[in-house]
Amino acid sequence: MTELLSIVFAPGFFTSEPVRTAAVIGAAAAIVSGVVGVFTVIRGQSFAGHSLADVSSAGGAAAFLLGINPLLGFLGMSVLAATSMELVRVDRASERDLVTGIVTGAGLGLAALLFYLDVTTSSTTGATVTVMFGSMFAIPASIVPLALIVGIGALAAVGMLYRPLLLCSLDPDLAAVQGVPVRLIGLLHLIVVALAVALAAITVGAVLSTGLLIGPAAIALHLARRPGLAVLTAAAIGVAATWGGILIAYDSYEWTGGHGWPVSFCIVALIFVAYVVIAQARPTRVRPVLGTARTGVASAG
Amino acid sequence: MLARGEILAVRQASVSLSGRSILKDIDFALEMGEFCGLIGSNGSGKTTLLRTILGFVAPSSGSVSFDGGSKSASVGYVPQKFSLDPYMPIRARDLVALGLDGNRLGLPLPSRGRWQKVDEMLEAVEATPFADQRIGSLSGGQQQRVLIAHALVRRPRLLLLDEPLANLDMRSVAGIVALLRRLSREFQITVLLSAHDMNPLLSVMDRVVYLAHGRAASGTTDAVVRTDVLSQLYGYHIDVVRVHGRVLVVAAEAEGDALAAIERDPVHVAQIP
Image (cartoon, rainbow over the protein chains, first blue to last red):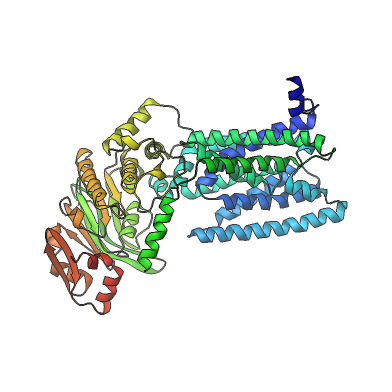
């Protein structure tokens, strides 16, 4: 028994300071991402979520350049992008995609410049990999307090907005009839997404934070029947994948001869496998889609 | 602006969207408890008129007056397009609960009173058997019932429905019409419902507001759905034919504007037996 445990949990796992920091920040990021992600997926704003993740990498690069807390960099850039995306008034869904795409392009361009400056000033490419793909065992413990404050703030905001946000996500007109300020709720939602993405960027990296935002939420939507349960399920799946990923990455030092695999890879791989398994086990009914398509052909002919 | 007994008055209202005139000098009023059909072909401005009454669109001239305290509490609305993927974790009862307090901040605390109101409303629209199913997995008629429950759970005095009968099979249409008639009496609400085909509503309408080319004629069905009134409204000769208890609105000459109108509006053609 002890032998089996020592195989699953390689020596030093529970006493390692970096592992503990990674587990705490990782869980905070996973909970916030899972909770917020459910609304993002219901609203069909996965692309916007991914865009904020991409743009936040410019903030991470800037923080490295300035030598400040990277979380501040991610936060500043993702919140700025979220605000600018929501403040552009659009009438059609396709325009929303367009604005999102343009903001993403501009943000990634800025990231390219800042990463270049990082390399030329410090003559290392480490920053790029850390910002984009995360480096969980290298997170300084000094980030923890700020990360927890951001996480609690984001969760409190979702708790406050829960009902109006859900109603807006289902149908903006129904919300407006009840006097809900639909545009304000949309802006606040995207700012909370920005907070979630910044937290996740610290852990799994800016680019992979989408995986933590969308994956657990998408799995939870397949499993839960009611909205509150979906939110809790997504958070639980996110935490399980994060801790599982940390464990696999830690153990991987044993079988890779001391190099180890990136934690972020292990986390998103677990989420991906879980999604494929769940989606296979509970195939979404495609009949309505096929029916619509057939009617379309018939009326066209 | 409202006369005694009136709950809604639209006075000389004109609406333009992006510079295009959609509604011109619309003038009608609804009395308390009336069941009114807003009839017109696709593109005649039905949705815009409903959105103007809801306050989503401001009239460029004229006015909309509503009696019933604050608008948010007293108007129920069933939108035309409501679609949710089958895997969205929203049960029928969740949507009805959001009709009750979806504008409130904070998490919904477990409350017996809240769910009791929701259960009563689900019962009233005969949605209890599928109350715990995901909305996206329900049939069109079932979804309409849930949306009506969502709109009525706050007990508004006016209920607006945008094409609630579109895309339903004939049995569901009859079911929804009968339900609305019963609810309007039970809860003493005024109903304004848009439709492109007036036939399913003939037996229940107290009043019809007929829209054509952005103009409206209002009154009882017998007073409005007549050859002379509709010809004047359309601006060319229209025949109103009554066959087997159904009303057919047929353009006499299929050329020019009239042809265009018929092509825009397949319903009028499709009704010819």
